[in-house]
Image 1: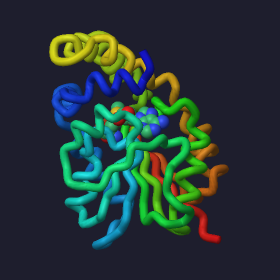
Image 2: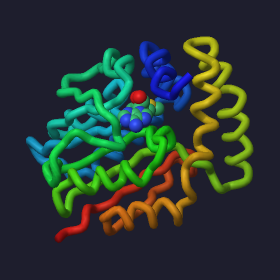
Image 3: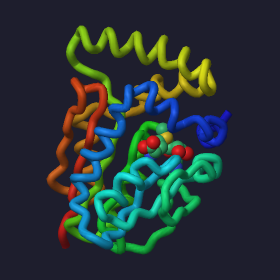
Image 4: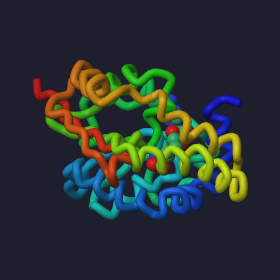
Length: 218
Ligand SMILES: C[S@@+](CC[C@H](N)C(=O)[O-])C[C@H]1O[C@@H](n2cnc3c(N)ncnc32)[C@H](O)[C@@H]1O
């Protein structure tokens, strides 16, 4: 099954599972993500791989005008907030150069076939000086948190997924963290794509991460 089909299938219960699996922490992480976009009324912010729209909702509450984009029609069909939607690919974004005031991307980077084309597209469509905010899961470095986290994601999450949604999908999602480059590498990739002031923030003991970058001014 392709990743896109997997998301089509889990879409109807995606929000419910997010709240259960993260104990609602994802809501806090999203609010923090949106703060780094520095929205002002009317800012046009693209939420790449928007899924069911939780980040678009946070952006709207922060006063921005979000646009959601995702390649899964199932996820867009379960979209839960008011925002214009685009059915499109993060690796080939159908938006013109230097026209966007901010970009968010939540829990999707590890699903992209290749990260570099996404970063280049993000730099292409952002106005100079504007921000990209990538929210992702992470592997904690602390030995004890790491052991508990690994057990939770490898055993408990697939079990909960099986009860409420799809066990195969919720076995893949935690495993897919291995596709994420190490901190030094991802920071380097973002810089080489046309960004500066790249920062990584560890969230909740390092179980999630927030990467912030500013598009280089000409
Ligand atoms: C784990 S979900 C995250 C959804 C949402 N951003 C959130 O914060 O809850 C990953 C999303 O990435 C989308 N996705 C994966 N690869 C994509 C691509 N190349 N282009 C557009 N969307 C993609 C999937 O369809 C899915 O909706």
